[in-house]
Amino acid sequence: MEIKSLELQNFRNYPELKIEFDEKTNIIYGDNAQGKTNILESVYLCATSRSHKGAKDREMIRFGEEEAHIKMIICKNGLDHRIDMHIRKSKSKGIAIDGIPIRKASELFGLIHVIIFSPEDLSMVKNGPAERRRFMDLELCQLDRLYTSQLSAYNKVLADRNRILKDIWVKPEYEEILPLYDIKLVNYGKYIIEARKKFLMDLNDIVKDIHASLTGGKEELVLSYEPNVSSERFDEELLRGAERDRHQKLTLTGPHRDDICFLSNGIDLRKYGSQGQQRSAALSLKLAEIELVKSQSKEYPVLLLDDVLSELDSSRQENLLGRINHIQTLLTCTGLDEFVKNRFSINKIFHVMDNKAGGYQ
Image (tube, rainbow, N blue to C red; front, side):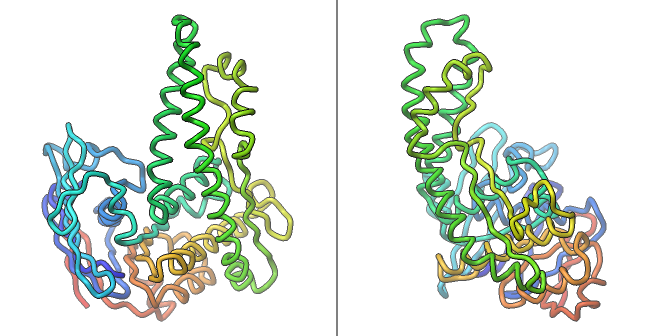
């Protein structure tokens, strides 16, 4: 599984851009605010139909333009495939695989797996639960097409239910339709809860050895899923909290309030871990994610590293680089010192400057 080339037109700051990647390590370097992250964002978008930064379609179109295009050539199981994406300000995006339009963006999932690792991910352990839920959703949406549709439907029903809760005081007739939204919320939510539970169980089987290696055997990391409510009791707890929801004008029960606990030798790293421990846990989690994709899809994912090395100390840099030299990696940075220092093998380098990316070996 690899990305062979990428073409952009009016995407972010790029009027036009074409890059041909190496199958191993690709370094994209340049000063800040030159558009390095935009290249990774376009790759992630083309693989998953969504921005890893949560950006809306119109925000990714170059200023002054009405639409943007992305074309990405990938190789999977020895066969080349072309993904075309047409981003428009006033319409939903158009997507085609090998020239054939697809009806649902979820049809992209599974064609190629990408994992993105950014400085924000290093703060995932200490930040709020939303960051950790986002981590689960980003990966599960690539591994499980049904999860994607269930999550999308759940979020839509949740937004509708919250809107009803806000209006119910002036429109009492909404009392009659609220139970219909409760039923839908529970049906979609149960699948999400069970999928997240299994996902973290599978990750736990992998992350333990990786974290032990990163910490020299001093720490044992355990990921603990903290669902807001169990799938078995979701309907009961939603009904029990109905009056509270009406008062708060908000749905307070469901997987949209889930969390993950990071336990190192029994200590909750979210509250009591040092910055070094929190970053090691986040790094272990990303490395475990790579191995989980490999075990389930039988191929390694493409790894996108967005200026992560500058946030890691030398030992964590060495650990990360030593574990990814066998998979295709697109890595952004402001300089090449880290790679020289770690004697890391570089296969292709791109210098980003003035909305261009010049490549050389």
